[in-house]
Image 1 (cartoon, rainbow, N blue to C red):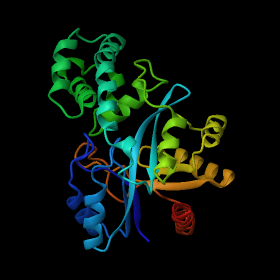
Image 2: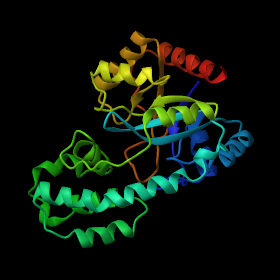
Image 3: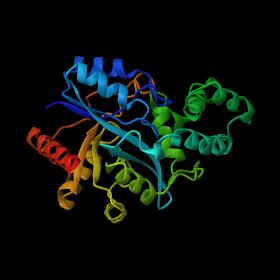
Image 4: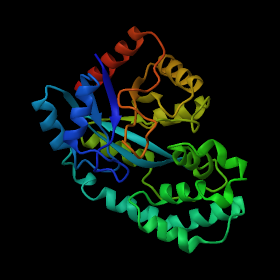
Amino acid sequence: MHFDLHMHSVNSHDGFYSEKELIARAKEKKLDLIALCDHNTTAGIPAIIKEGSKQNLSVIAGIELDTLFEGHEIHILGYNIDPSYPYFADLSKKIDNLEKKALKERIEKVIDYFHLQPESERLMNVAAASTTPFASVIQDILSDSRYREITAFDPYRKEGGNVFFFWDYCSAEGPCHVSVDYPGLKENIQHIHNAGGIAIIAHPYHTFDHNEPLLDRALETGIAGIEAFSNYHSAQQNHFYAAYCDKKDCLATFGSDFHGPFKPQIEMGDYHYDLQEEWRQKKLTQFLSALKK
């Protein structure tokens, strides 16, 4: 079975394709199973399931929740959820308001840390004109000719590099971090369970990399598994998370985090899988079995 368990529609602020267009692309990629996991909303679930049924493509109802865990901002995937669960109804607006409060401080921290021109007002206007405010601000900075000599920007100047810039400099471990009061891990897991679903840590990247005690504590809160293979991981990270899932006998999932043009380096159905196919199909079977419980 060919599958991709993490993608976004236009219902995510950084998504591009409609539910119908996602199904069409999934069919082109010869996928048998997909999961829609929009940011903090289930608005697209009914439409994509309906369209998937028309095209004989299986669709899992999902969501991706902004979450706090021990000071780390992480994303949690909820699978097989009831999209009409009340908590999800206005969650996206609540999260947007939280992030707007932190936006100016984030911009000023980046300006101060890299000794950029003091123009937070202009960059705030860049943010206001975009559906992806901070990402657009970072892209503006990275492409600014005045900052060509800042070598720290070089790894992020390629398409989609602004996403990695955020994680490397603005996450909890980074020098430009601004704390946002997202819902806590236990709270979000409880809501996923209440909605009939299971909870998976999305693209753990470097937050949990070779940090088994932190992963252990996350699992103890009710996490069912980890998105072990992701486009954002190095091969070493993919293998670490895969080995951890085997060691802890927890679920391992696989997701491209496809958004369309916002992340042009990502192809639907691709998550840098390079282990034996037997292992991937085994983990898929375990995942699908968990959804039925």
